[in-house]
Length: 78
Image 1: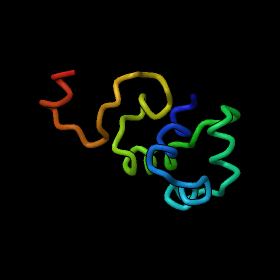
Image 2 (image 1 turned 180 degrees about the vertical axis):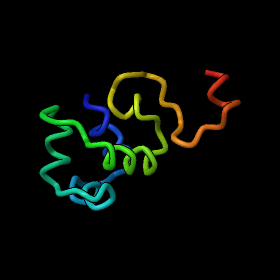
Image 3 (image 1 turned 45 degrees about the vertical axis):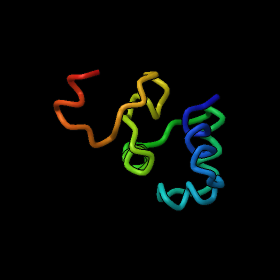
């Protein structure tokens, strides 16, 4: 399953609600979830902050959920 879709469902949000939080339209969220496109840097930053996950986790490049606002000590523990 697509990571953005997975996170959206965990948060019990509609595509429209997530789009509002990311500052994009619903079509963009749909395209991210189907793998047609990836979020631009600004939208990815918004999503990572909202879901409190790393960029790599958000984009499916890592299975380590991580945290968006990790301290240096927390990063070293990974």
